[in-house]
Length: 217
Image 1 (tube, helix red, strand yellow):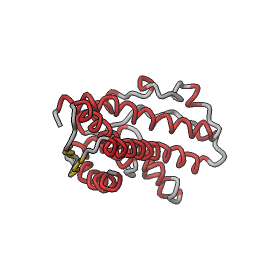
Image 2 (cartoon, one colour):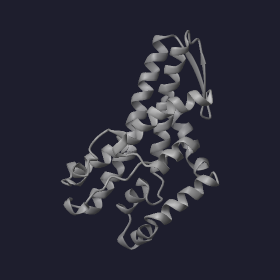
Image 3 (cartoon, one colour):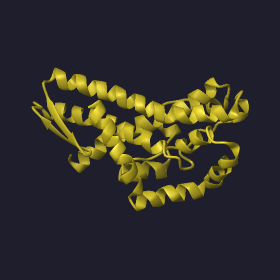
């Protein structure tokens, strides 16, 4: 894929995927009785409400990024521990949902236009595309599947402040949760950036992403 075309397509897909991810965090918290996301203006799909400059930069460089966390108040939940787990789970679940929707659209478009595609390790080869527009649409839909699976798997990693750590804290006994609390904030973010820098994150998540892609596409 041409690098310029890649970034042009990545931008709207990335904004949609991250905005929907954060919106669902807020929506589930709101459904559990917490008015905080609504009061803070986060119950919206407007990407400007969710955009984090550092997360957007990571998206452009590493193809995986993050947005500003949606503020929630678990004091409103009947069961704060389970409530936080449900709110955290809503983010990755939203990305899996979008990946499934994009995969269906991609399959329908391929069948309707009698196109053959080959996928391997994040690269896609398109045969029988009769016009540049059809080629671009296929790339856009493919990127929607790819990026949302990557975001879901990345956020499920059990590293604070990622959603996976909050899901795990909802399952673990109380004596183990304090270790995750210590990594919340700048320390956890530094660890994640270091794992990106040394390409450890990619080695963990991209084989899983490829597995899901081969199932969906």
